[in-house]
Length: 137
Image (cartoon, rainbow, N blue to C red; front, side, top):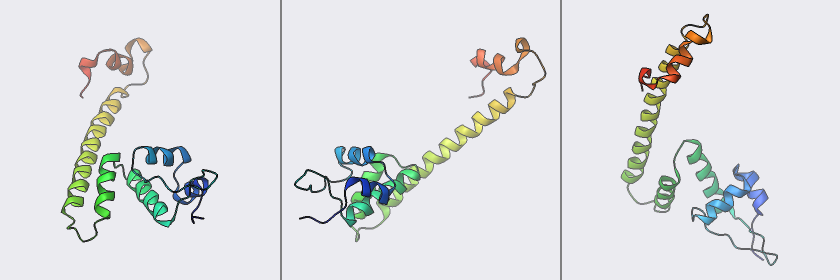
């Protein structure tokens, strides 16, 4: 019989929900594990490491395709890290873009809330939301 842990235990050990583990298998991010005679999946230590890698990458905001690339690169330990650096740099640029966008959005919402002692008829929030031309983004 094959050694391993069932999907529920793999979920607890990795911090990834059972349906998400199944999804990762479906899209090929995680190889389908061997199954018992009763057709239960059994995950070994390398599967659990891979799941934790994926979880951590997702927590850092990486999308599925870059994670797929990083996993492939992790399987080639003698390869120079230029490719992994490229993937991380692209992700960092995306984070910087999101931060800039959020900073702009924050400033706009702060500007909208400057006056709070008026009636809804002259409310700056209602006015700006009603006229996108007043928006700074």
